Amino acid sequence: MLAAMSRWEELTGGTSGQDYASRFAALAGSGKDMHGEARFCAALVPAGARVLDAGCGTGRVMIRLAEQGYDCVGVDLDASMLAVAQREAPELPWFQADLARFDPAQLGITADFDLVVAAGNIFPLLAAGTEATVVERLAAALRPGGLIVAGFGLDEAHLPVPPSITLPEYDDCCAAAGLTLVDRFAAWDADPYDGGGYAVSVHRR
Image 1: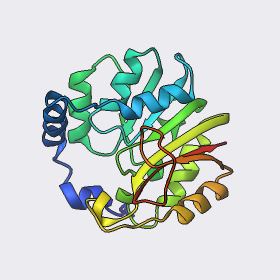
Image 2: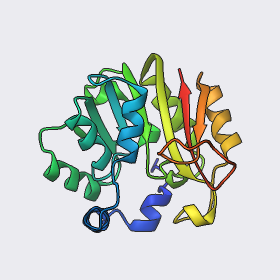
Image 3: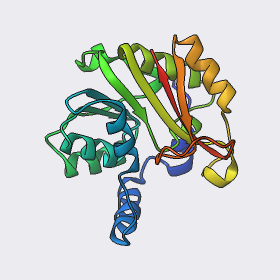
Image 4: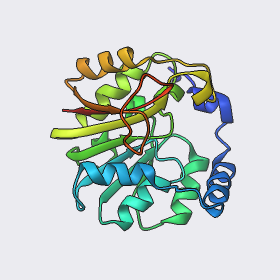
């Protein structure tokens, strides 16, 4: 049976890797801080910790964390995005996989991550109906006590697609996977969550 197409694939056709990388390169060139996600993650776990970048895209977050001494693995469904990541950091482990079918053992990865990060609107861009499965699979990749952090938009102003998952729905998925909410922020700079259209949520296994 064919897997349902993700909203990301519907949006981009799976060919947007270089365009995506160029857009972020331009933002970096303009002086914009591009490392908020990595800085946020570094405040959660010490250097040397194992980090799974779930939906790693072109590798911007993971490459920065690896430079800071983290033991990182990147997984993404989009081959065009992974091609950019592999070109930028060929020494790092990048894997093509559907998060709804993510099985570390099949990829030869040990499932004892200290932190799973899902940045870049991963959950709103999943295939419809797979959100709970993805949370379950990512939670299973964590060691006991490990953390999962996910940042995503909740309204049309913060998303390239119509909103598809609310915070209560995401929390329910996490609870079903044995995860407990630790904290929630309004952005990757760790401002307190204020009920706005973007949230960064930290849950613990």
